[in-house]
Amino acid sequence: MARRNPKVSVIMPVYNVDRYVGRAIESLQNQTMRDFELLIVDDGSTDRSGDIADRFAERDIRIDVFHTPNSGAPAARNYALDCAQGTYVQFFDADDWAEPTMLADLVAIAERDNAELVISGFYIDTYYGDDGRHLSEKKYQPTKTYDTQEDFRCGAWKLFDENLLYTPWNKLFLRSRIEDLNLRFRPTFWDDFPFVLDYITDVERVSNTEQCYYHFIRQRSESETARWRPDMYKKREEEHGWMLDLYQHWGLQGDAASMEMVQRRYAERLIGCIENVCNPRCTLSRNEKLEEISRMISTERARVAVSVAHPHSRMMRMMLEPIRSCNALLAYEEGRFISFVKRHNTKMFATLKARR
Image 1 (cartoon, rainbow, N blue to C red):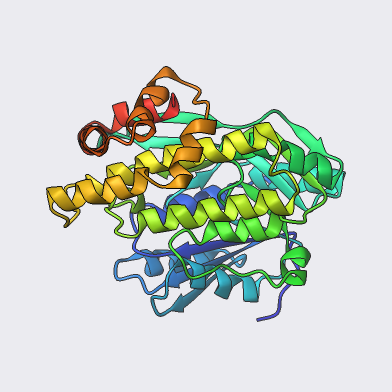
Image 2: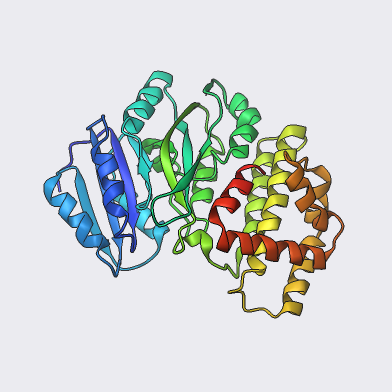
């Protein structure tokens, strides 16, 4: 199909989200900037998601829908990247939505600053009732243009600390840079983080805006985040290794602020791994859970993390105590409590997590 080289290629993988995909597409159709293409990859959905996307495409020439066998979100995004023609790329999840000026504002910043990457704030909308009740948390850092590579690297810890550098959907990427680096998403559960890491490793021109546009929807029962993950600890260890490698590459392994953030985030993720083991869907016995928790909190990495980390809240300082004292039983009871709150009081869990 002939293309007209749009300003932005918006890439949306879709899989079994027929309750939400219409809202996601409509939020893009309502963008004040009209010069974009929306590339939807229906990743073998077994519900009505693909049909819904097709109906939108029939009425909007900017939308192309590709139907592929189920291969996962990384493969779906990569398929769309191979088709993309825009100057910039914006990634978009099919169960989220965006404010109407998102594309226009991010493109204006990119062109004004000649930026290779534009980062924006975003909302975490946590729904805790069937009637639409939800909590909305803003994640952002004050607006700043990083004029040099060194400036960005030294300030990146603040962006990581607000979760602004982990995901691809609150960013506008320069497509030519993606292609020059031959970047594609890796076939892993946390596929988006390695993509972002590869992109920012040697990036030079970065702009950040404190304005929030993207609404990330969290904590529905069918969400990926609500499941027991047998490989979560392995993945978190891998993620921590990536962060250590990044800061070594940047020559900042001795920077106190950067390393405190890296170690604190790892310690916080250890608590998440403990909670994951305590999920009722975990098939391990009680003794096996205690052994697994003991193994996680007894490593040299765990010891270093809790010795360097300075949690922002009293609650988090208390939650790290079982790791600091290597008390597997106390960590187990703490994990069970967190798991209970997460499953039975989404509002409280979201509030506590926001205050960590």
